[in-house]
Length: 110
Image (cartoon, rainbow, N blue to C red):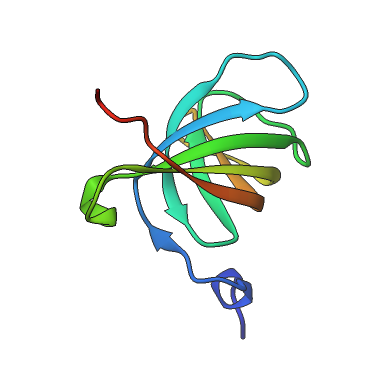
């Protein structure tokens, strides 16, 4: 007997990281959230905003100094919404597949 966790191709890590999300096809404002879990292939986060299954998004995940052991590092990603689910707290759970990413050093404080 197999469950959903057994079918995952990549190990997921439960991590709460700052997240900024921008839908790619419209001019909606950037949304701020945080990840619930992360893998090298995707993320899961909760949002008050509804997303359409299959829609493309851009998002930036910020790795804090505690993880990088140097300074904050931003990972700019392009992805696609692959799952949308209701949450009893009135939020929507969003799973997004990472299709492309690049590391971007955070701006210096100067």
